[in-house]
Length: 80
Image (cartoon, rainbow, N blue to C red; front, top):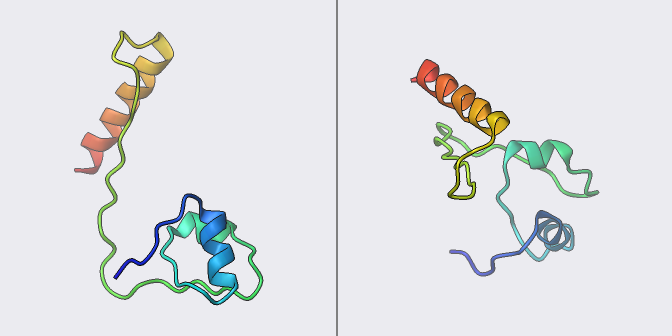
């Protein structure tokens, strides 16, 4: 049951540190966090797939952005 959504990771960590909440966060956030008195533990079981979206304006991309999109597309096709 989710009782409250927070706007930022820092707010969540403040609530957890104060003993008012449990939080879920990605490994990168946990690794970078230095909140005293807070311990991160991985969830048991298989890691779910994380879906990531590239958001951009609906216009012709610049050369640099087009190359970046091509690189992402080739990485994705190599992984599947």
